[in-house]
Structure formats: structure tokens, C-alpha cells
Image (tube, rainbow, N blue to C red; front, side, top):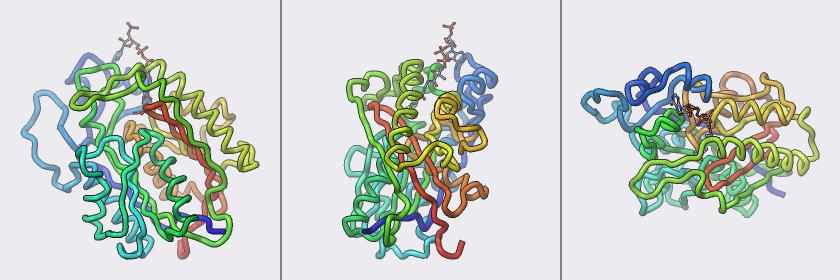
Amino acid sequence: MTGVTITGWGTALPEQVVTNEDITTLFDTSDEWIFERSGIRSRRTATGPFVKPPPPVDPPANGLGTTGTLAAEAGRKALEMAGVAPEQVRLVIVCTTTPDQLIPANSASVAAALGIRSGAMDLNAACAGFTYGLVTASGLVAAGAERVLLIGAETLSRATNWNDRTNAFLFGDGAGAVLVEAVPGEGSLLAWDLGVDGNLVPLLYAQHGSGMVMRGQEVFRRAVLATVDSATASLERAKLTIDDIALFVPHQANIRIIEAAASRLKLPPERIASVIQRTGNTSSASIPLALIDAIENGRVHDGDHLLLAGFGAGMTWASAVWRWQDPPGR
Ligand code: ACO
């Protein structure tokens, strides 16, 4: 049996910080309202800047101005950390709902930037994307692909309607990457659950060339239910209970959704990973950003059971129970 483990990771964020105060220059709102409703204080944006009056727009000095450049930077760090050369990677999966262009897939330019030629594809399951990607990568590793570079990367700032005060404050840009490698035996992915209800497309969508449209309260309500149901299904399949979970790593959409789901799952606040206060909702990038933040802050230990859970436009949902293994040498 071939299982999987994570041997390297990396993140990338654009330089530009957009605070709630900056957002108040766009429409009638306040830092207090945004923080209370969402838990967000600031987000990073690769495109913009979104403040009035607009200052001259310079290309970002760190070069991280697109989904592709953010993805490549996070992926490069993951490979470097794992000590793996580009030619040893069998596939790059870029999970994104905001690709830089319609054709070709974003993963093609990411693979080129990293010097990878063995295979590349995009995966779009909105904010459930990274967990869908983790399950996909694990399946491919079981089928013989020894190493898959899995990246969640977004520039939601380009899909946001910056005049719509009901949701523009929620979104941010960024990327997180992990290298998924084969290990003998069961490995880290103990159980998973994927789902979609395509009848709910009208709740959250963006047409070509126009900004996101969202029915916020309905998304909120369904997000809590989907997260709890999916997480419960994964726990049952792993034959574990919530008490076995050391850390809950949810999609970072809104702190109130995270807290409502955690409370229904009976998870105390100290077992929740969260970066939303400074990243906003970064869709496919949000779970790897929260996971890597927790790892780097010493909150994840060898043998810990992690519960990943995301939901997003579609509506899609996905969860996974992951038994963390420290990579060799850490
Ligand atoms: N500043 C101040 N007031 C505002 C703002 C704002 N930016 N936006 C709306 N309001 C007002 C409204 O007009 C309304 O006023 P009224 O009561 O006089 O009519 C009041 O505030 C309350 O508005 P609601 O829409 O009821 O606010 P709610 O508590 O639902 O919070 C929010 C809105 C934060 C968007 C919430 O519904 C939410 O988080 N929904 C889920 C969103 C989400 O997670 N989406 C991502 C999905 S993932 C993906 O796939 C991208």
C-alpha cells in the first residue's frame, strides 16, 4: 500500500496590505463593522491598490502580482524545503478559482517557472479546492506518481466588485503549497469526503469580466452545515472522534462561520487554526496558509490528527482527516 505524507511547504503573499481603514475610502463601512461581521482586519492584494484616490499603480516590487507568480513562489519554497529537484516532481496541481487567463491552465506557467515538465493541471473547486487537491494528489500518488506539488493560489482581488460593500471586504490574495510524497503503509490521509450541490451555483458566482455576486446570509448558513456534515463524515470514516483532533484547519471565509462550525463540532477555540484576520478569504489558498502558519508556530506535532474542512462556490465542500508526520530532519 502506498500512502502520502507532506515533506515541504511554502507560502507567498503579495506585498500590498489593504486595511479595513483603506476599504472605508471605497464605500460606507467601518473597521468595526467589518471586523465584527467577518473577523478580518486586513488582506493582501496583488492587483490594485484599492484605495481612493488611487495612487499611481506600480508593478509589485516583489513580482508577486498574479496567481501564477504567487503559486510559483509558494511552490518553489516547498520544493526547496523538501530538498526535491523539479525533475523529481511527477505533477503540479494548481488549485485556483482565479486563474490568470482562460487558456491555458495556470499550472503551465507555474510549471515553467519551476522547471517542471512532467505534468501540470489546474483544479477549480472554489474554496474547497485545496482539500479536493489533497485527495486528488493522494490518489495519484497511490497510482504511482511519487511526488505531487500541490498549490492553492488566488488573486481574488481581480474577481471582487470593489463597489459592492456587501462582500468586497471579505477577499484577499495569496498562495500556499505542499509537496505530497509517497510513503509505505497507510500514510497521512486517513479519510476524506468531497461533495457538490450544483443547484446552488446562483448563491455565489462571477461571470466573465464581472465581479463576484454573493447571497451572503444564505452562503453563511449553508457553509456552516456543509462544513459540519462533511467533517463528521470524514471523522466517521477515519473511526475517530472530535476528541482525537489536535487541530481544526478550516477554510478561512469568515471567523463567525469558523466559530459556528467549531462550536457544533464541539471543538474548543484553542484547537482552531486561523489566519483570516490578516489574509481575508483567499479561497483555495486559505487552508494551506492556515495550516502552514500553525506548523510554523509550533502548533502541529508528529502524530497529531488534523481536520481540514472547506466549502465554496458551487457549492462545493471537502474535508479530510490527516495524521501529521514530521518530515525527516524537522
Ligand atoms: N459596512 C456596513 N454595513 C454594511 C456593509 C458594510 N460593508 N455591508 C452590508 N451592510 C449593512 C447591510 O446593508 C444591512 O443593513 P440593514 O440591516 O439596514 O439592511 C446590515 O449591514 C446587515 O447586512 P447583512 O448582509 O445581514 O450582514 P451579515 O451579518 O449577513 O454579514 C457577511 C455579511 C459578512 C457577508 C456574511 O453574510 C457572510 O460572511 N456570509 C458568508 C460569506 C462567505 O463566506 N463567502 C465566501 C464563500 S467562499 C467562496 O467560494 C469564495
